[in-house]
Amino acid sequence: MYLYNVTVKIDPEKQEDWLHWMQTVHIPQVMQTGLFEQYRLSKLLEQDESTGITYAIQYLFNNMHDYFTYQQQFAPQLQQQHAERYRNHFVAFRTLLRIVAESE
Image (cartoon, helix red, strand yellow):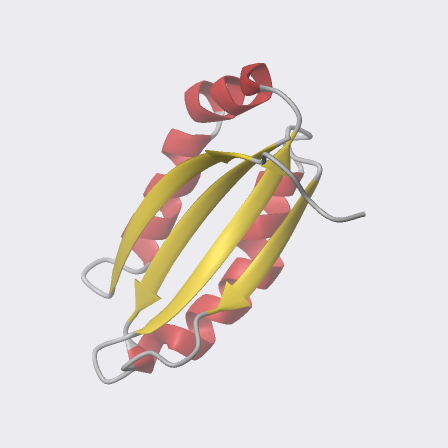
């Protein structure tokens, strides 16, 4: 299994709108692609939030073909929507991980 992690630091004044939009629009659109098995939305704790509030969105998937399909067919448009909506109010970085072991 694999994990696609998106870490976003959002300006405090946009955080409430961003969180609502992520839960009601963006994440449902990502999941509607059918390429991810599940997701988690987490807030980083013990962080200095004076310049932004940090969240991690983790999407789990079974094979790299699904990931590459997402990156080619869906990610550009979805990322552009996010960038336009929150222009100059966020920073983001993405990481790709292979799960080596997990509890049952």
